Length: 249
Image (cartoon, rainbow, N blue to C red; front, side):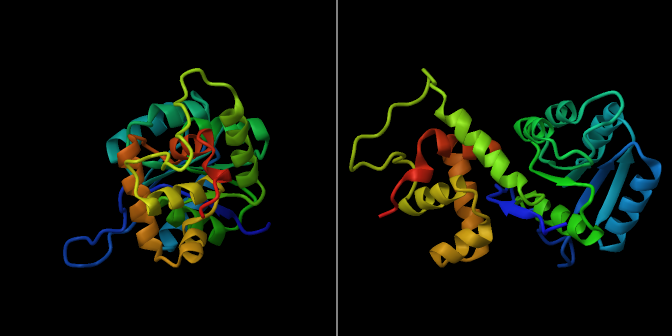
């Protein structure tokens, strides 16, 4: 398959902080899948790449219990677990800082959108190679949104559609010549606009001649100032206010 694409992910905090003694703490992962052979192979690949698989689960309720017990950096989640649907699992762990990467045999539009709306950070189909999956887990832990090629456009298109629906509770547009969000700096507004277009952190950094970490910091500050919690909320907010169409000049 083609390489997964990355959309503008939102960090909930830096997961790569140093452990005691100065060595980077390994990313912790919970893997949930009801196919024993696939689960075993995936766990082996992740551990072999230096990731710390803290638990596995074979059904939805067990996934929720173990996510709460271990609080991993990343939950690699199959959509079709016994007991609970994948979107139900996402909602059940939505109060945790754990980021959810869907790894499913389905690439159907309704499955993808249901998972992302429920709070999943990214979505890969199971035809991805082992190295692509490992890279996606690491990117998810960094707060990036990773999708199988073609799915990022699908998700962004759905957000655009939702943003175009009339919302009587929406805030009025700012007067011409005035910054739409005075609580944000000009640079934070610029980064938010690029997030709304689906650009990755790396692409935004290149566009604005900033470091990857600086872009992450701007996004984290923006989340706090706008009282938003995750990538889904941020992109919907930006699109609802028409930022993707703003002229940065």
